Length: 433
Image (cartoon, rainbow, N blue to C red):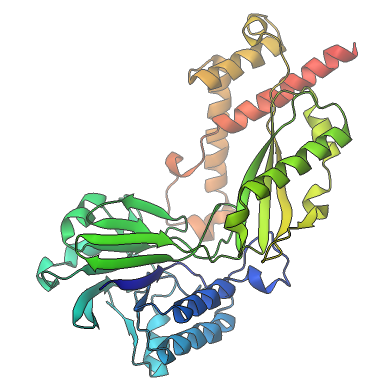
């Protein structure tokens, strides 16, 4: 007898997906919450588990409150219990919602930062759900410091719900070490806080982030949706993602080598987008908004011409796919990441010229080595980042944080792109002489 559990977190009800029309109802995270409730009741699950940050403190709280309560009411009416923990965004919101609404089957576990458990029963079989909730917006202590194996029932599956930052010792959002999760005792750790779905340990115990069920930005690409846990016994637990997000972000690479005219480029881009959509047809049945980042790659000596030829595509390109969701395709961003069409970059790097210095730097980035120009550019980048981190404009956001280089992206990719762009410009100027 298997328990079917729908697991999710980080809904951030009240937020909207970026680069989706403001009037699109499906651009709101509430759309995915409503889909989750419908999915859970159409083919009834045994429980819904939520891992925190369900509500978003900073975004239209009162607009989100009604849909959240309505969903809980529908689940309760269907006899489906809900077990949840609070995250850093909703640490003081969920308790007031649950406490004031008179729900019998909605349980907030671990309020105030104390571990708490509940037993779910189904036809004589039992399963334990345990959880810990944020007591305040920032927690620097490891929640497992107060966890005890003595609270766990033996011989029945144990599912633990925790909103935490796994593997980040300096985090202010309940830092937890992976090893401690593996040794703590529960058979499944369902986590919240990270929006990208991720399986940290695929075994016993199963440790995973279901991620945000609703894709909110291009930083959260690919499929999104809740996870379905099917628990037969302590040794038979499977997890499957249910792709319910009506928004999806993807990156498409287009090779522009040898293209010398605007029409050629537009045809190649259209072909690339359609080919991606065609290959992913089965994954788009519920996706209403497919938002692309377009990366132009290959060899080309006129990157500015490529930009000009595609000017306006981010606002003008709209196409609807012939599928059940009538998926609307759009382009959010165009990145020109081409290399100059140089017959022999190594030979060019030997020249004592600006073009030669750029070629040397390109080769150094690609090989993971250094040269004087690359070191100078790297130092300039880091100094600028420090200046930005300490700028008065950002003090309200960062006054509690020290500058840490590991929090900023590696500048090498950006430097490589700029070296390609400048070298292509130099080559173009030489061609014009």
